[in-house]
Image (cartoon, rainbow, N blue to C red; front, side, top):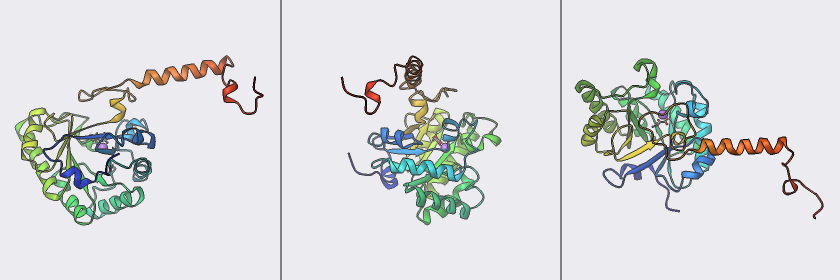
Length: 269
Ligand code: KIV
Ligand code: NA
């Protein structure tokens, strides 16, 4: 396999071959994608995919660290980015630094990601200046679900578009190495792309972004509760999982399992 990808490598990919990102929360999933993708996001979407919550607001720093560590241990190639969770960075640049430092120290990941625009610029500059690579995240920012009034498409009118461009530029100027643009009208995403000199990573944005990311559970059909328009399902693993479970259950109930191959010390023949 190829050389380890860092946040600087991601930054240098602006305008080049599209950057491939996927989420992973566990060692097994990280192993499946490490050699293939450019970066792995240990997203706070794990609140919904792994823990069955209705939003990402309820996840804490210890949980992000635990999953970040599992993913880093299973990774040798992809750049690993861990989400800063709601409540552990918005209060002040100092709070953000303490949380980011714990994530870097305790997981060994390459970078953190945080949500927000102009209001987070001071924090991003504080972190970048102190050795923490930051990926930004604007547009539909799920941690703000309670003030956005639900998961809603962003950039629907000219005022909103100008605000998104200002947010994107502020993240770039503050030192982000890349910027996730989520749930933004395609034409607005394209305007953002035109003004940015760091890579944009789209999710429900535009094919013109410098890269794309999706939640792996959505990509493989492991998360079935709902499917946002921007998700493409590349596999349906749930039926395969259910089939295996049904067969196991049936074999246990009929005493076909365990057979000779799966017990110890049975005389041969
Ligand atoms: O938590 C997450 O999975 C994310 C991506 C959707 C960008 O932030
Ligand atoms: Na997230």
